[in-house]
Amino acid sequence: MARPDWLRTFVAIYRAGSVTEGARARHLSQPAASQQLTALERSVGEPVFVRSASGVVPTPRGRELYAAIADPLDRIEGVLAGLDAGSVPLPPRVRVGATAECFAGVLLPRLAVAGVAVDAVFGPDAELIDQLATGELDVAVTSTAPPKRLTGALPIAEKEFKLVSAPALAPPRRIRDLDRLGDWLTGRPWVSYSVELPLTRRFWLDSLGRPFGGDLRLVAPDLRVVGAAVEAGMGMSLLPGFACDAALGSGRLVELFPVGGLIAREPWFLSARPGGTARPDVRAVVAALGG
Figure 1 (spheres, helix red, strand yellow):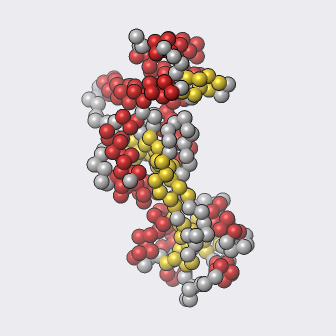
Figure 2 (spheres, rainbow, N blue to C red):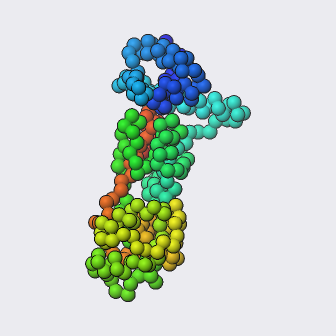
Figure 3 (cartoon, rainbow, N blue to C red):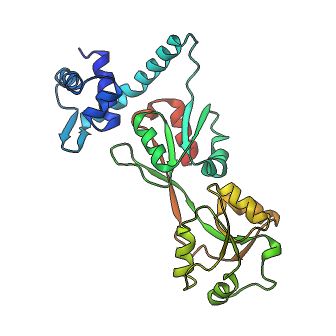
């Protein structure tokens, strides 16, 4: 019969992708973790991981076992932690990770109809993917597809970019071609999400046929701030539709030129932690976000 500590060690190794890192997470020595894993495999009757120089990969039996035990074990650990802290454990909440801008502009309208208690977690893609792997998140929405060993990633939305400005900064007549657009934009104020301007520089080079020639007035690593700065007249910008559509609809922003067909759309991927969809509330969130 498998013992609970063997199962805890198995889950830690599964999430870490390594016996050594799983042992560290369990505060065990590497030999002790290996012994527990061997004992578990003997109880299961077949290997649950394939070992390699770079770590471990779950076998089909290992994936089945993880899906069956990960969520119940997490709940037990949460209850034990609450009891140790002298508090009554609260009902589980679905931990959903995304960037703050994506959560506010894309996920909130979908989550509002899910009827599920949610904890929002904000961070960059790499951090969210790590938290998904370690079980700190139930669901993550990222623009980077997580590794296949975690879960299948479902594309749920795309960023379509728009070239926008405040009405006061727009040209008096609509610009009809890219050459004139490049001439008009050169030297004019610009607002950006990052100083590297990766998307902007590609647009200028590939579509306008010249290096970036705007006057960078503000860099703010939050699309909501970038959108507000453009509305305030600080400069032009390329913004995803979710960050500017409301302002375009109300007339607070204007679209300078239709660039949606010139800039590749960037997908968002929805991923659930392995075994997480055994919970009905996690399934409800996945259904709401993926619908």
